[in-house]
Length: 83
Image 1 (cartoon, rainbow, N blue to C red):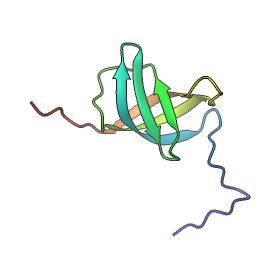
Image 2 (image 1 turned 120 degrees about the horizontal axis):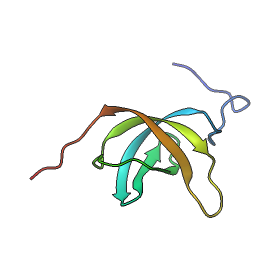
Image 3 (image 1 turned 60 degrees about the vertical axis):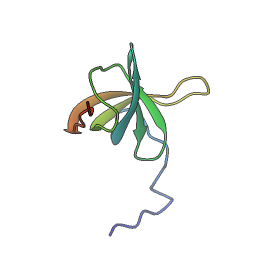
Image 4 (image 1 turned 90 degrees about the vertical axis):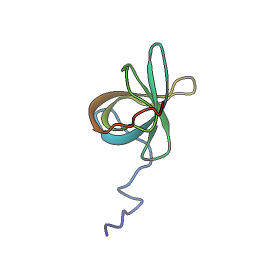
């Protein structure tokens, strides 16, 4: 088990960081994600159901007005919607 020192570990992501996320919702412009550190993010990407696990890259950090902006790089596990 790796123990992270607070000197090196930052709960906030920087641009170009690779992160794990789970889709929590969507709109006509893209999808909303919950990132591994608990932050919410947005990606301009469609066709993924809530619960889908993805790897993504941070494009922009969060501001007071906007969520973290990410690009989805790959889908790890896709969930199906029950009929």
